[in-house]
Amino acid sequence: MTSLGKKTSGSGFTDTDPDFSPISLLEKVRNRGRVWKDLAEKYGVDNPDPPWKINLDSTCEALASEQCTLPVLERRNEEDELSETLYQDVPYPERQLLALVHSMIQRGLIDEDELARRMKFVDKRLNST
Amino acid sequence: MAENHKAAPMVDEVSDFEVLEIAVRELAIEKGLFSAEDHRRFAEFAHSIGPLPAARLVAKAWLDPDFKKLALEDGFTASKEVGIDWLNPTGFGTPSDYCDLRVLENTPAVHHVVVCTLCSCYPRPILGHSPEWYRTPNYRRRLVRWPRQVLAEFGLQIPAEVEVRVEDSNQKCRFMVIPMRPEGTEGWTEDQLTEIVTRDCMLGVALPHPERKLDDKRPVHKAANPVHGH
Image (cartoon, rainbow over all chains, first blue to last red; front, top):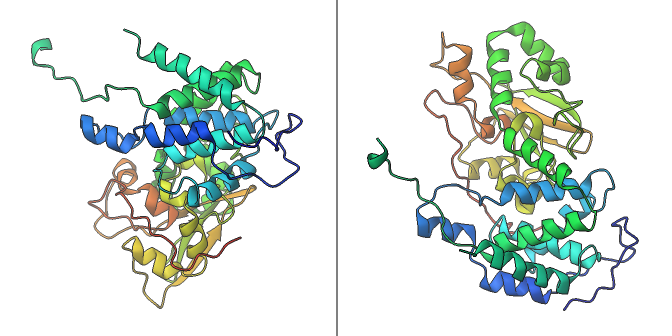
């Protein structure tokens, strides 16, 4: 679990420096998840980006618009830092996704346990036959 | 015939990253951080953009001196000629990259190259999504310090007598480059010319070539001497 000492008032702005320490759930995803580069190679697919990349970009855009829950510059600065430290061995765009979720959890926009439960639910749904 | 049709290869497994992306999006919508409709519209916009409008702008500028003058003086108005309205690029509102467009012209004496040292500002409405290397800190840090060396890593050697100008994008201004029209394209139509103006040419890390129509995979190099805070 990460320390959630960076909770905000809903504006998305933190009053302390960002915390770049590992987050348990994201470490699991990082260690267990299969990155698009490997999947594309395995299945002979030549799309440079995974199908979820557009949705990820749109989530970033939507978070920055209107209410400005997570401003672009803050998110990008944190993504830069995390890309060169914690997630430096994760390829793009998987590291962009991890960095975004890292920033969201840190700000208290989503809760790590709640996200873990939702992931189980989504996983079951996507793999249902 | 149906029996001869071979399906294109597809990834037939669900990755944890895919699950994570969906879970985060669903929770954000449930919490009211944004609406499903907002997200759908941004996704639709993101699906629709690419470098083609900018390539057409360049081709038009190569063929029409008056249009080139307009593009260099007023990129905003020139963009409308290729279907891009910077005031309302998505058709429903302004994404984070709403801004002013500055069009730069390469000449035998000056070569322009574009960067965003601060983050990854990019003229998305007219040029599509930024390539991965454009976002990397090492490109952003090093281009402003050693432009010729970084361009050489892209395979672009700029002669010493040609001045290299690095344009730094920001929240208000985005840039694109009109490269010099290559030899061997005399008599070509606008459509033909549009095909050879690749994204990289309009960022200034490549030159157009009559036989080159795709943006190749570019190498990503780690900074040997990273400069933190820049």
